[in-house]
Structure formats: structure tokens, C-alpha cells
Length: 392
Image (tube, one colour):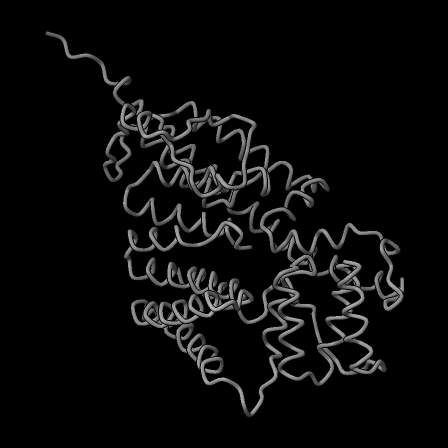
């Protein structure tokens, strides 16, 4: 749990994807010219040029209004890369006549993050909740640029609740997080764990199904495979467990062979990564603006590629190591006769069918973005079929 918390705080403080971003004051263009170029590129919608211009603007002495205008554009046009959006938050200028509430939010987030790291989960939750309520009211007043931070606070609330072992409450908060949130796949990962902790196997497998949506990568995090294996064994679905082993083995072989196609799939792991990988696959001379040179675009693409590949190489080692452990566990599970787990209330299929909900086969190719997060496993336990009838 502590590792998951640290990762969240790292992302809030600048995001690990943007580790190579530095803002140095070495540009000759005036602030006025840069702002004009930024507005021109925004009108022509050239995300790579916009990213370069944003980095140049970050090296200038901006007023709070200028900083906020650029921030507002990025939040509504994240194709420039989420890494630079998070980095932008760290260079927020201060002004003597700032509204008191704005400064209090930043200080409150820092305090809550420290409480979370200290494992004072309930105290952290209360602060995150207060911030979320404040941001929600600000959004209602028309400040839609606070939407992303509001979603981050909801996820922070959910994580604090998980740490406090308030799993049902964590699941309730997860339902408030919008599907447009860039870390929604991570949210589904956390939903899986909360559901698993209280024995809701239907919700846990449903959350895994959402992680497997075609809008994301074609593979899961190793822990998701682990939970899937646990549940299949609990439900005596040995054939499904064997199929899962085949899936993991093929994935492991891809990683070990260094399959280049896997990089593109990895880059679709979540929306944050995809925002960067989309820029990498742009041609340097595509949509070239008059404000940014071709050489600048080429250099930025190379920098992004370097950042991505550094993260990719780290993930390959981690994935290969963890998948080997999951395979070992699944082999033990298949050979084990006794496998204890929290009891699970069976699904009432008649009530489910009468509810008006749509029912689709798990291998159906049709996939809708609004379904992500709403999946529920309605399969049966096969354990009863394995029990020999008692002789009279």
C-alpha cells in the first residue's frame, strides 16, 4: 500500500513520465511574442508545437493570469502531454492579491499527502474530502479547469479509505470518479483490490474486465492476473485458469523476445502514456508552425522517445519478473485441492435479467467507452460439479 501512495504523490509532484523536462531561461523570444505564438498554434491545433511553446513560456516570468490561461488550455487539450501539465502546476506564480482559498488548497494537499505517507489514513481522508468539496463548488461556479484536480482528490480519498481498510467506502468513492479521468485504468485496478478485500468476486472480475477494455493495452498488470487466478481457483474454474496461464506465458515470451510491437501496446497502458506516445509517432514536419522550427520538433520528439523508452525498459524488467511469480502461483493453484477464500454470495440470475441491464458474452468484440467501470461477473462457481454425489 505504501508504494502505491508514494507513486501517487510522485505523479502529483510532476509525474514520472516527465522526468526529463527542465525549464531553463535561455530563450531570446519575448514573453509577448511567445504568448502570440502560443495562441496562433492553439488556433491551428498543433500539439507538438504547443508543447514546445509551453516549455518556452515556462522559462518566462508569467503573471498569475497568463499562467492560468495557459493552464486552462492544457487542461482542455491534454494532447500536449500530461507530464507537462503536471509540471506546469509546480511553477505556479504567486501574487500579493491572490484569493486566500487558492493558497490554502495547495498547502492542504501537501499536508494530506504527508499524512498519507505516515499511514494516518483517516486524517488524510478528511483533508482530501474538504479539498474535493471546495473544488466541486468551484466547478459549479464555472471553473471547469479544476475538474482534473477534483478527480485526483477523489482518487486520493479512495486510496486513504483503502489504507484505513474501509473498503466499502472506497468502492463508493470510486463510483464518483469520471471515466474521462486520465488515470481511470489505475482506478479500476484499485477497485479490483477493494472488491477483492471484501470478497466481492463479481466486482473484482468486473474491474479486471474494465482494465481489459480495447481502449487500453492488451495486457494487464501482473497483480490483476494474480487476482484473476485466485478467483478462478476459488470458483473451481480450472479451464479458465489454464487459459489464463496461456495468456501470461505468451505475454512473457513477447517481453523476453523484445517484440517491438509490444512497445506500442505498452504505450497504450493508460491515457497519460498515450498522450506522450501519440506525439512520438508524429512526423517532424507534420503541421509545422511558423513559430517552431523543424529541428526543434525533431529534438522534442527524440526527448519524449528517450523518456518513454527509459520507463519502458524499467517496466519490461518488472513485468517479466512479476509474471514469472504469477505463473508459479497459478501452477500451485491448479495442483491444490484445498483453496480457502472469503465466501461469496451467488448471483441471482432471475433478478439480474429482470433489472433491465444488458448482458454480453465476455469474449464479445463490441466495446463501448461508457461501459468501462460498470462490468460485473455473473458466472457461476463450478465447485458443486466437482463434488461426487453421496451414495445412499
